[in-house]
Length: 247
Image (cartoon, rainbow, N blue to C red; front, side):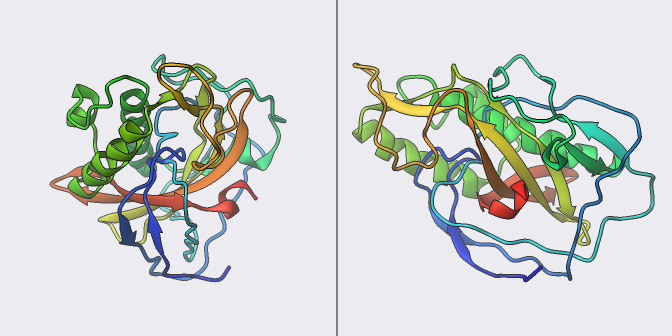
């Protein structure tokens, strides 16, 4: 897998808004996340960062392979882990690799922070007026960089009179692909995104400037999230489109 060091716009992990440009790089080797054939099944699905949704560029992240300090378990991503946002209606094969990924116990805090960050953003974008100081964002595990990107995106969406419709749901299926640096991790997520932007007065669906913006039943969208460890807490720091997350 070829490593790249592109600049990309952060669009709230579910293709939500036009964000500020930043740079992310992947520092070590090639990584292939194994798909186990047996193991303990746990549920993880949901939405509101669709929200680590990015609508403009893509990032490739690679590494040398998953840690081996703990035995991986099979994680099923077809069941809702939260009541914040319901899963999307698109039905996918439960045996599809995108529904089954190796998960190490030490990765769970990273995944939990990613999910919380995405959900907070999706919930915030679904309420009018769009508020960059919403309680959800204030409590979310996200960095100042992401807060600023959210603010920039809300300015644009407010000017367009648009709010995010999350009624169709979002299914998040994140997994860690690189965590060689103990303070930095890359998460891939083949989301099933059924959200869409609409005019807050008429309800008319917005033009597809925020990909995919298709609505129900949803479409698989690959994204990457950059997570950083700050004072013992994992925070969502950046993100972008990553088609390989759905391959």
